[in-house]
Length: 355
View 1 (cartoon, rainbow, N blue to C red):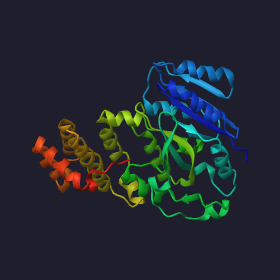
View 2 (tube, rainbow, N blue to C red):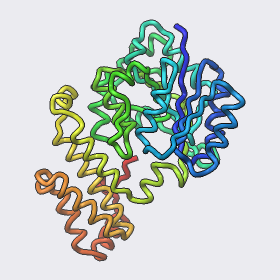
View 3 (cartoon, rainbow, N blue to C red):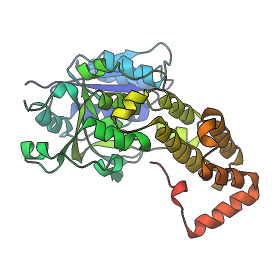
View 4 (cartoon, helix red, strand yellow):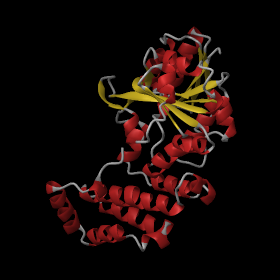
């Protein structure tokens, strides 16, 4: 089977990094690919950088939106322009290691695998703004589902694991994590079309929503537990900007998610909508609200509490931890001091970071 990849790169104001991102694709040991770049009306020098590569290499196809259409619609525009059977949506500030496509091609070229109904992902190294490795994500960061083991034998590689899609959904959905890193996850164009692509109604997490739809549709996951991509963390990154600005859009995204799946779909994965709502309250309302309160951002904490009461009133009024959170808020500055004093000696699970 001849494997050819479409590397889709959605970009907005990443002139500083996108050249390095494109170079990492061009320098692959496996050279059967096209690069699809869709610039989302950047206001920096991105378009000039992109055009310089498109002029030099015919495999680089450059497109530019007349106005900023938003994150999710731009992902769809890139995927819809992909000419090849297999798509990787590579962030414009992330990079691929030289052997990434070669490793993926080895998996996809095996006739024992239904490549049309597959999510293929890998571990990633975390790099800073200067490209220095500062950490890594392996499969345990995303899930703890037992490996079925059949592909380890098939490829004679202990780093290759395979999983049932519904099992991965069950494990990751309540943690608000995808099955693997966004920038390292491959899927077929047939699967993309089967699930209707990315959701334009999601403000921040369309990639996770897309992965969940794939898993619910019966797609299996194959994970290569060695870093084949680099995920960049820097002050101007989308996730970092959202966190820094304490964006209420994240809570809106979770609310949209809570109404995106039917009870029948969740039941097939062994979950309920009530479980999901309680996870939202624990992780995104209480945990995040306590972090804001610890930092002295009382208004942000109050906003989280009010969102819970408005969006999920029937669940919120029965949630005991929410009352503890509300009591600390009522104490004002004294609540902040009490929380800081408590955390000085013990960090409870309800204020842990959700990475």
